[in-house]
Length: 253
Figure 1 (cartoon, rainbow, N blue to C red):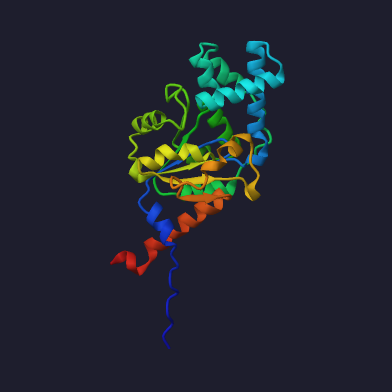
Figure 2: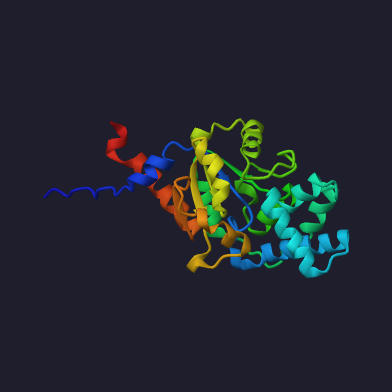
């Protein structure tokens, strides 16, 4: 009796988009940790408090100014710098001075990140210190090579092409061999234009914060290859497909 070997099941889209990727790039906030863990609202509150202390505005007025800076300059920090209103180091230290004790190690995500073939990098509009302290709390410090921050980009934030070019130059990244995972749709336009495979990470069941809600109109654009509300699960599918391809009889032909 002949026993047929089980056939491998492939997802052509995953293999076509990720089969050549050797550099895996991840945003930090609301991407590597879930949006419902409460970390981003803490940062948002600290930004509001910084503006209140700097300008003497009340809370509502400071939030309005914060929204204005975000819409016009991309980040509050960029707005403050453009207006000569604050030192970047002071702002970043204050905004990211938050309690991270609520973070828990994410063993599932750590495993799937470690399985990815090639280099793994963080690209954030926040500070490097914030990124390193946050991934330490998530148990992900060992799987990333480095974190590229707003200071390294010359205070030019995503989604500007200049920020991405600074990132490519710093690490010698060929965008055509890289993938980007990000929670804001607009931040995927520039990397897609340069040939990166793009994945939008969204909260489960459609829940989103103010930033994500304002960005939602771009979530169905051609600059987004995939959308997932389960980053670890999505990476597991990619890793399993890549592993299956390597062990398939067809791979040896």
